[in-house]
Image (cartoon, rainbow, N blue to C red; front, side, top):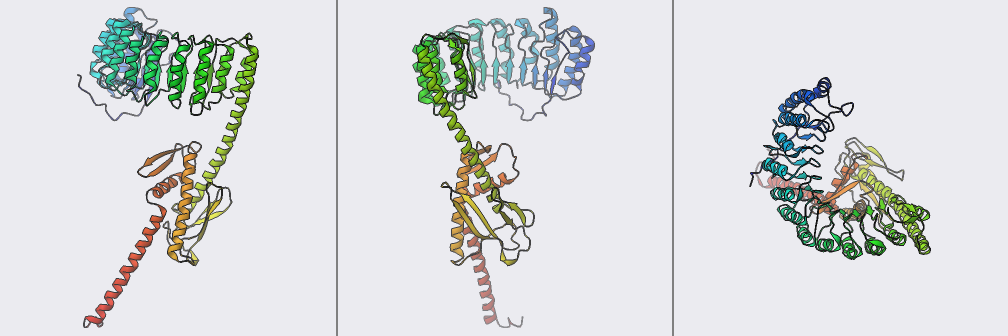
Length: 627
């Protein structure tokens, strides 16, 4: 097992250098000198040479400037994709060797991208300095680089020092075959921090995919997995499902073009349906799926409706029956479904089944794309589909009328009715949300103006929506013993809770006490505190309900709730309100007032005790009066 190297916690301010030649051509020495000159002048953390053809003439200047940059000890990310496409093989290898050797002097690289270069074994060897002895390397991108089993063996050897820190590995589009994927699996088994693995289009069989699945048991941090365009049978699918159940952070699962068919996908979906977490993106295109798999897929959709954002079942053979069954799944999950994109293109579906599916997903508030291309739909059907999905893209091919056009027209009428109801509800919801937002902002403004400390003397705070004003005492001289303050807060029933006779004594600054009325000081304090506590509770609930519209984030801390804004556009009022809500939740306004009253009673008791002691000394100690 390789020794783990802790990643340095500090890094320079990010600066990116991007080489931008005027055209796609082999750079001349003069042009390379001018383009690379800034490299030795700034401490760049990222260099992007993508698309620049660096031949022998250009690499001389590039190498010297890259060596200077490496000496600054700041470089973290290197993007060298597609830099040798137009070069002869020997010249390309010399270029790769020179650039890699210059950059590789610095041993704290974090990310290396060599995608879209025809590397092969010789190219990987030429880039050895970018991988070998780089213990802090976290991301490696090698998609479409012409790797084969032997070059993967070299790569795995070079990456050994970094296996404990590697988080991203991309080897897409290399014809590794099964032997190459087996070697990748052996490397993955040593990567406990792996988060993203793209091992698609490798030409591997189901046994190699099974080996990769078992290797993933070494990590529980996997967030994205793409093994598309390989092979996956039922046995390998069961092993993969067992591993994916143990990945709580998994959000993207790409399983397209695996030729799974119904049996393998059912074996995969059934264990995942019972898992406590679901993926956000599930890509299942091109797997020769038929209607028999839809019940298992439907159960997964219903179980994880709140997580699933993207579902792609394009280029399968679901047919009209399968698409109709899929519609039933969304019928059972429409209330909580968070789907944004649904792709069912090229599935041999009928126009009627597409409209029945549309009736269910038109209710989904987050839907933004519905792809039904490859289905025979009349021009009128396409237009009515697009009319129903306001705010969402409907991708469809206009064609001829179907044989069951009468049923389609009836279903389209139902779709229009469902869509109208849905859009009416959305419009009403927006009005309610707008009104609630305004009410919450008004309430927040009133409470902040009444209770927040003020640095200036007697600052005038205008009430939102009422035109009333509240005088906030700031330590100045206020005659009459205090300033009367009034605030109105909305409760659930819409009635106002009126807070009156909250008086601020002169010279009190930001510290507030309330003078007693006719019923006595303690009863008046208790009643005022209870009213204020109810008003704050209403505000707390309104803030939580309207946190989306107000761009507030809520988090619990102990027994309280802290609200904070993602963008502070309203000034410091929200920060004051945040502390007020936390104080109310933790201690309670009543407790705060009682504590203040208790402190006052203790002070009075101490003063009375001191007076009694003085009187006792006057009566008992001889000569005390003379002294």
